[in-house]
Image (cartoon, rainbow, N blue to C red; front, side, top):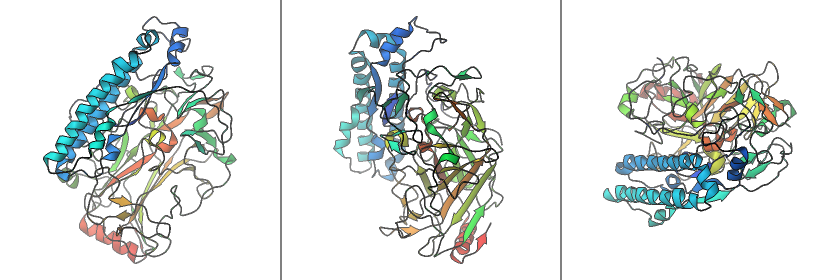
Length: 528
C-alpha cells in the first residue's frame, strides 16, 4: 500500500512557513514569529534588514488558552461537534499567525496594529467558537462550565533577553540547554531561542538550506537540542520511565506478547489524527508513520478500522500503531515539501524509515492484567510539550549500546560510530474499566503508581512498549550551529524539540488474540 491518498475534505492552506516563521497550531499554546532576514534572502516587501530587525523587537508571541485541555466532561453525543469546533480554534490561530507573519511592515509602523488587526478579531472568532461548543454540549443535556467563555482572549508577548547556562540537559523555563554549554547571547523567551537576537547565527548552511539557529525549515532544531551521548553521565534506571514510575512486568504478571508489524515499508503516511481530530484533515499538522492497521486516517470509523488489512504478521492484530516521523535535515526535500503538515508547516527533510520497530506488551508488577477493550485509544507523550509544559511528556531518546546507561528526555542524542538512535515509549497501563476514550483523550487511562498498582479503581491492562531504532548520520555541532540535524515531526510552534515526541495506539486485536495475550502475560510466557 502506498501513501494514504484517500479523498478527504481540503484543509486550510497554510502560509509563510519558511526560515522566517514557526507556525503554531492547536487550541492553545504559543505562536512564535521569528522576524529576521539573512543577507542572502530576498524580501518581497522591499524591506531592508534594519526594518526587519526592528520588527523583531515587537510582538514575538501570541498566547491563547488551551480550550481542549479544559473540556474533560463532554457527552459522547457532543464529541464530534466539539472536536470540529476545537479544530476551528486551531484554524483561527493559524490564520492569525499567518497575518502576523505577513504584516511586518504594518506592525513596524503602528504599535497597535497587532492588537487591533490580529488579536482583537481573533478574540471575537474564538468567543463565537467557544459558544458553539457550549451549544453542542448543552444540546445533548451536558453541563458547560461558563468559565470557559473567558478563554477567548489571547495575549501578545515580546521577546525578552535571557541568558542561561545549561545544567546537564535540565530544562529551564521550557528551553532545553545544551548539556552545560552557555547559550551565545541567547534570547530565550520561554522557549524561543535566538542567537544574539538574530536567528541566522553566522549563516552556517548545508545543501543550500539555512541551518543557522532554526534548522532546515527555520523553526528548529538548534544546536542546544543535541548532546554527545558519550559525554552524558549515566542516568538510566532500568524499568523506570521518564515519569519516574516503574515500567511493568518485573514481577506479578511477568509474561510478554510481541507483535511484528514492520517498519512502514509501505510508506503509509498522513498528517491526520483520528483520535484527537476525527473528521479533520491535517489534524496533526505533522506526518505520522503507520504500522499495523492500514485504514487509519481522519475519517476512518471503528467499523472500517476493524475490517482493515494489517501489516502485522499475526492477522489477529489489526491495531493501529502510529508516531511522528523522524527526518534528516540535510537539504533533502521529501514528497510533502509543499504540503500541509510537511514543508508548509516547517516539517522538512528526508523521512527516515526505522530499521527496527519492536512492539511488545508486558504485564503488571503487582498482579494479573485484564483484556483491553476493542477500539481502546491511548495517546502517550505530548506533541505540544514544549509550549504546554511537561505534565504529559513521555520521551526516551538513546543510542544502541547506551540504553542501559543513558536515557534522554529533552535532548536528541549524537551517537558514536556504529551506534543507532533509539526512541522508546512505555504507554499508560491502567484503564478505568469503562471508556475507550475520554474528552481530553487522557483521563480514561493512567500510569501505574509508584508501587506498580493502579489507582482509583482502575484496572491493569497489558502495557504497550514501542522501541524504534534508526540509522541516522551523526549531526555535527559547529560554532553554535548544528549541521545535518535530525528531528521528530512536530507542531511548528514546538520548534522540533525532542521533548515533543509521542506515540499513539488504537486496539483492534481480535478477541481470541487479545485473550491469548492476556494468558501469556499472566502465566509468565513469552509469546509472539
